[in-house]
Image (cartoon, rainbow, N blue to C red; front, side, top):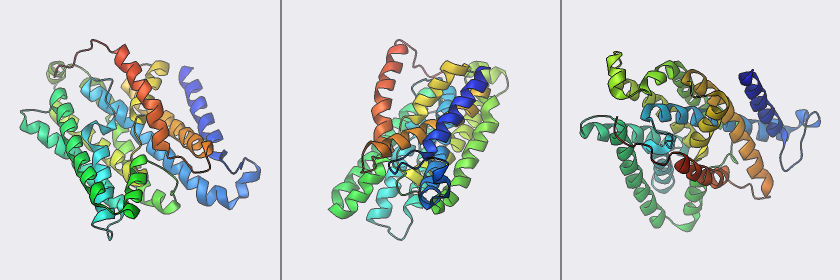
Length: 314
């Protein structure tokens, strides 16, 4: 019963938010409007896809690392996407920004994984620290590029880093949707294994699970989906942290349910957040700013709730 109610709420949020905006278009009047189908519809579709993959990725990583404070950007995906954007704008304008952001996001995840392996394994602590190091390094490169850019191109990079669906068109949806859906599909298939990976590492090994290999599969699926999301809309943080926790409060911690319902909730919440962001002002506030404003106090709340939790490398 709870799952049915939760699904109904997600669909209701998604449906209402899809048609509300500063132009005031509401069904049924808006169904025949070019604004709805050519501007708003691709924006809603892309926001839903990005919300789904970010949320499912957050749920998967929190299970793999046994850490409730993990989100998809732990592995350097955010910094990698930002670096790809900056490189495309500053030095390689013949390379599409979306392609550069996706490739750099994807490679940054495996750079984190490779760095962890050089430290003798791919345990939780090694991966977390490697992600912090890679993110810091890539962010420093982005800052250097921003310093060297002229003001006109600097504006483009800064807007990308804020995260926005303002320029979403059907072309972006067609180019990005297959990659995002592939990442979501792989995470959906791996949802059963997340229950085993959430056990202490020694217990998982006793059950015959190759923990390092399984983690690599999950990281690859996350990198695929989140990298494509960053390529499509820039850096949109905190969705992958907040949504899985909200779903756990409603439906419990079982990963077989948590992953698919996080996809649905993430899609609805990010579409609603984008609707709110574009309706607050006439300047179309980047949704990444809004999610950050909501995510920071949520992170503080989680820190207080998990005070004293272990951070050992299980």
